[in-house]
Image 1 (cartoon, protein in one colour):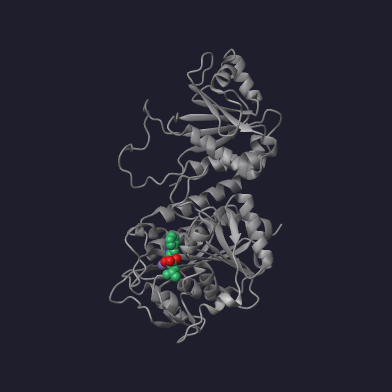
Image 2 (cartoon, helix red, strand yellow):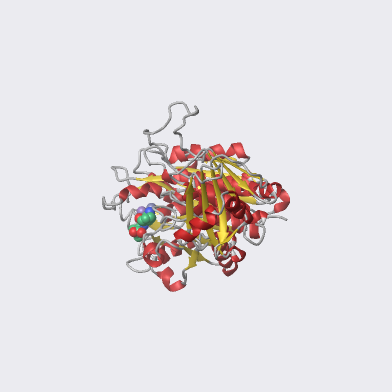
Length: 508
Ligand code: BES
Ligand code: MN
Ligand code: ZN
């Protein structure tokens, strides 16, 4: 849910309300603002640092409550170790960890004096810090009915929710400007997290499509293709997955034309949107099945990226296509052994109805190429459990037919901390999915499950189309806690693809 905390940037004035956060590098070497508070409090900060063994290291902090001689209710001295060597990701994570320090001791206002002991913080870095602080503040509390105030506002002396964060910096104007696109990215990540966290009784294919439609407000053209249209288009692989559900399947097509007609062919982003994956007739075991409400994280990411691009008015032509289905077992569900004809004309033997994501993507990928002739196609999917066996939860799997695109994606992953690890494709793996009765089968046997799934997708990529597939099963949901995320749905991929696009696909 969107963060209700107002965030602003101001010059280094000396306000007196709420909580102050100041920094120290290794030593500890206090920043000018920290020194100022130390002086005003007759050496309280230095003394507290000494008593607690604070050396200005990362993840070290001293918390001073009701400090004598200061008007702040609380002063937090946070360590940065060596900020001179910080990457953008370090600034992002610092913003997240500072927001984490504030949790539970929230006063209405927090003043963060963002500076290093020996120099200024660049505007872009300060914007990253702010983004990290916002991302860490995300909470999905929509369904918590306890502890909520009945009528939003009202002065309550015990109200500890954080209402505003003011970041004091050298050049607030420049930082405010740099922060504009960070705010758009935050909105995109928030939307993706919200969609992934939403339970499947609330968010089925139609409801997801309605949420995507809201992007029209930001200037994205949105079309929702209903089942009849999908039938006419011949998207039988996608429809087969959804046929066991009472909730009709949908495909949503989003277009952001930020580069105009001269911008040329678009980049296409395609997302798996299985709003719930029971496995179908090849039913999944009960334990952990609840996690399959997040099997639409690829689609959520695509919608999140489209929002970010539109809100920051990115100079790019981008298409988002998401296949929305619910995979249920019922009297109308597809059976193992069924053969369906995909939109591409290729026939698919359905050996396992739980290998449904690739069938949804097969038709969406084909549709994207037929209609838009994109200059590159990137799909995202919580496609296989096997990718977690291979890579754990720290990297998403990357498969590509194009070394340049793979390198660009890997670099964007390193820059944003949404890391990718490339896995192989090849003719011998492709053989694994040859079928005896149809053109291709939807499972490839026991070993290399993520690879055979990727090979399946590649059969629906036209020769010469640069394509990458990101298997985000381990990174998009049930995520490990990080400095910038405490939510079940991480919004993985939004920052990554936004970065890829701004580095390589935007008109200058
Ligand atoms: N949605 C699952 C993959 C998944 C598993 C995502 C766990 C996140 C967490 C996918 O549809 C699936 O069921 N894949 C099967 C493929 C198999 C039947 C070939 C898998 O990974 O077991
Ligand atoms: Mn499945
Ligand atoms: Zn699935």
